[in-house]
Length: 248
Image (cartoon, rainbow, N blue to C red):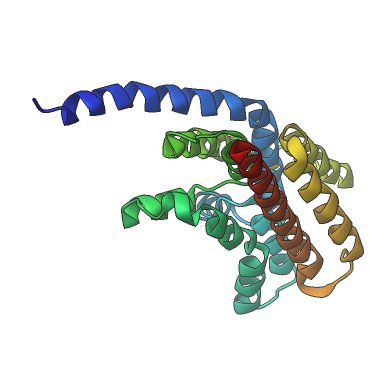
């Protein structure tokens, strides 16, 4: 009797259920993601980009931090290689995320690993690592990863498109800058849960304050690296503690 097909049939509903659970878990962050997209879209057009340029960057970059970092440099006439280098530096947190996820994604085919990396998000990855540390065993992990990350990007894109459309109608005002702060707070607040998240927020925020005047946005980069490193170390320590308790 061939048991492979029944096993696959049983696994598929479990994966779909896992995807829906992950999607529900990330849903509280969706309003913040949408708001952050709107703010980024407005900032790009107000920063001097044309609508086609803003749309292209939104689709190709998928990173509000990188986009907003590059805008002042574009307005100041900084050379494109320097802007590209700065964009790479502000995105260094994603290789750190990738290193943390390498063991979970290594079995995927290259095209699916590329897709998983391209659609990787800050809130989705944070919640994924939190669930991985909390659940024993951690099953259907790719369905969980997809639900947490892939559910975000449509809202980010729509929010950015709305912001780009609104930019031509909004008056020039420095008060609009505060929308970015509010959007980031709305996005980050639901994610600060558990020891690893609190450790990352505390260390990352401290480093960001210390390095706020560093050149080349190095304070931001150092804050991201420090926060992720502390979160990974905390997660590893908690996993070792849980393993020691299981062996008792």
